[in-house]
Structure formats: structure tokens, C-alpha cells
Image 1: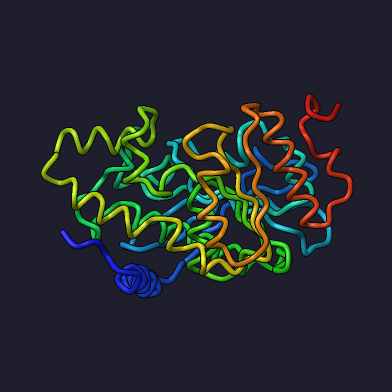
Image 2: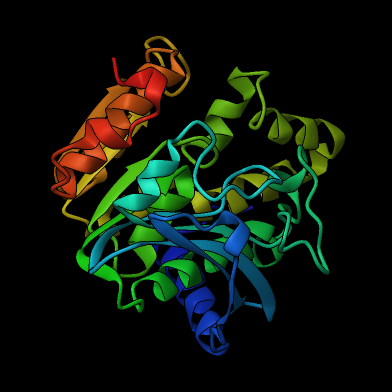
Length: 305
């Protein structure tokens, strides 16, 4: 099976975005008093994506006069949707507009399709046009499109923070001024998956062992999603690349081709295998990029000392 050319890949995503554009977002907004606080109001937002498919997200808006910097959390590789990432201080919502989106298959967006974990990474992977992540990428794009329409958002300070989808989304649609990305799913996946038994990449190995005759089709589909193809299209002012620990499969050295492919300044941070140290670095980086001087006050209490 012939590997897709750069022109093939660009056409694939252009067709995806064109198909997405045929569906108006049609936002429905619901106040969620139970999760609102004195310093932030929480809204439930439903949006239409490719399919059509109805999505759900948590939109938190700080109390006071905006516009505010914003953090967009695109769909994660997990079933549960969080308002902000687990371990992040709720006070983050006092300084940023935050928007966390559930892609198709995740909880609150799991009708008519409920994703399996593990299993989502290989759903439809033997046929690029039917690959589930084509739709999930469209979902992520739709979320950012919606967020930047909100009058509370300062369009000069919009951070997209997440896994591979953060970088892919920033490449496919305007709006992201900063990107925080942790490559996990789609960086040289066909080459790196056989070198690990860790999930989620082990899902690829499981699938190819089960259906060896589909191995070429799997490689072809993964080529459409590889971060190296998206990197030159990212227009954000700067990127924070959260790499694996030194010596791991996705450490800073392994990600150097991705660094070279990105057009703007890139900061590479290698994991110290500590949620505290890694999370603190990312929070401080985002705060500096968004001109938030007193970041200490919005960190989890056990991180402040």
C-alpha cells in the first residue's frame, strides 16, 4: 500500500475541515450553579461537530471585567471529562477562561457512540476516511472555533494545552496564540509503537497482532495524523513541548525532528517524572505567557512552597 504524500495529507484534512464547516456549531448553553463559585461561573456548552455529532464542554468564566486569557483543553485520551485537569487548583478559574471539551465517545458526548479505553486509538484505523480520530480532530477544532467567539476571551492570550490534539488543532484552525503539547499518540507512531508495551501505543501493537493483514493500512492512516505533518502549520507565537523523561521513548532527543519542524520558538521540557514538578513548570510557563504575575496564588496549596 502506497504511503500518503504531503499533498494527500493536506487534502485529507482540508476535506475534513470543509465537511465540518457544513455543520453550524449551534451552541446550547446551560448555567451549572453547583460548579460555579464566587470567582467563576461554570457553563455547560453543547456544540455540533462533524457527522453531525453533538459535543459537550465545560466553560468557566472568571468573575469581573474581562477580557481574560483563556486555556482550551481539547479532548483527552480518557473517558472522563474534567472541568480543569485533575490536580490543578480550582483558583485557576479565577484568572483564565477555561474550556474543556469532550470529543465524541467521551462521557457527556457518548451518545450515540461510547468509546472504549483502551480501544479508541484503533477504532476504524484500517480505513483513513473512517478513522475515529478524523472526527475527534474535527471536534477539537470546533471547540477552539467556539471559544474564540466568546467576548470574555482575550484573543491575544489563548493557550491550547493537551496531548497531540493541542498541536494538531493549532495547526488546523486559527486562534491559538500559545501551545502546550505532550506528544502521546501521533508522533512517529508506526515506528515507535513496536518499541514499547505501554498503552496507549500498545493498542496499535495489539491491533496489528490481531489483524496482521491490515498492518499497511494502519501505517497509512497513522501517516495522516503524524505531528511532523502538522508542525509547520502551527502559527502560535510559541510552543511548550512536554517531552518524556530522559531515555524514554518520547524524550527531548526523540522529539528534536518535531522541534525543527515547528516554525516559532519552542521550549522543550523533559519530564522529571513528578506530577508536581512537571505541572508546576507548565503552570508557570502559561502564566508568564499570559502576563499573570502572581501565579503562586492560583497554584494548588501543596505546590506553593
